[in-house]
View 1 (cartoon, rainbow, N blue to C red):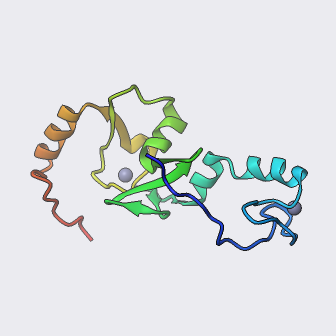
View 2 (tube, helix red, strand yellow):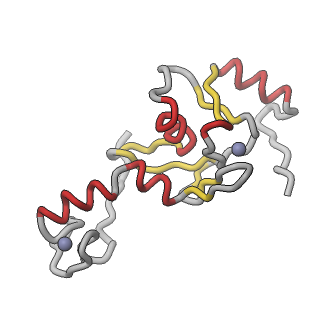
View 3 (tube, rainbow, N blue to C red):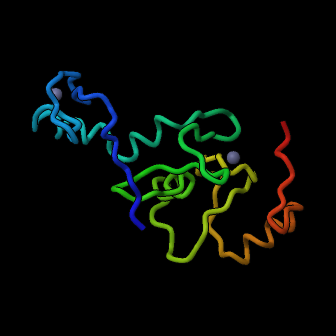
Length: 140
Ligand SMILES: [Zn+2]
Ligand SMILES: [Zn+2]
């Protein structure tokens, strides 16, 4: 799936030094800025900018789709809680889901996450009283 991630509408100022004169489609004014800026904008750095930590859940405050946070990593959409899990524990085995112990989809706190299969997910949902895609509103 190709995802349009063009940010051409962003202002033409250098993301690193703030200087003007950045060519269309570019984010930085010169190579040195690109090198420094990419480091700043590496996925983990961007990720943490959108996390609000608390004593309980760490909430994703970036883009949300179907109740789950997501971000673009190297041109691909990645779910925020999966990204968080991989940062903390390493790669998620193929085919496994990252589930929430806290039943709070926007939460990205690594110790609230665990990997499981689709079956685990269904059992987990049943145990928590969620089924058939119907979800009770999260307690406010
Ligand atoms: Zn610059
Ligand atoms: Zn949580």
